[in-house]
Image 1: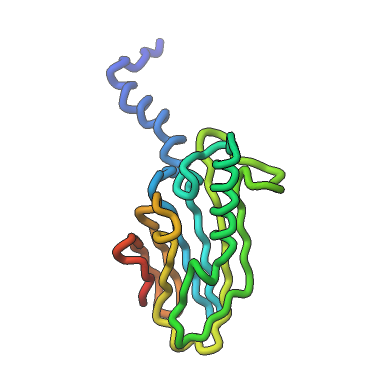
Image 2 (image 1 turned 90 degrees about the horizontal axis):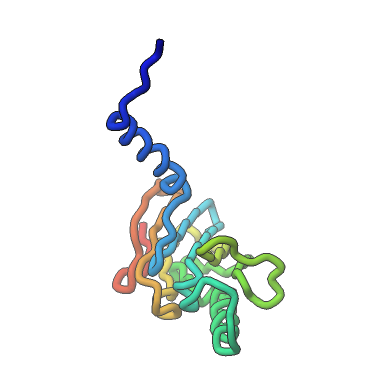
Length: 174
């Protein structure tokens, strides 16, 4: 005959099992976002993920004209990658591609699901003098006052690194 494990021994196992999906889903961080920078030869690829709350102060469909205008303004800023990201001037980089996914924006067929909504953007730059590339400054902190930090992952010819950008330190350097 088998005996059951006591409830006291099951508690740590049960807590671990119930916590796993929450931990695996990743954190949704109000006030923060994620920035991934990849440098390959003459190309810089920047991927940005920000909670909609950081951009407009809410994470749902806009309810009035003021909120619709805020969402449209955020979309306009996100679509101007050349103003948001400033590679070292001597590298002579130019923006070649912009892709922005903004939940609830006019003309968007899909919207956010669940309690949280994120804006995602991807920018590509081509640099004529890539050997002079020493960093990239972002103006995101000036444009979005609710943004306090960006968790950074960077990969390129000088290796990989992580870090954090803030209002006082808005530049990726290598």
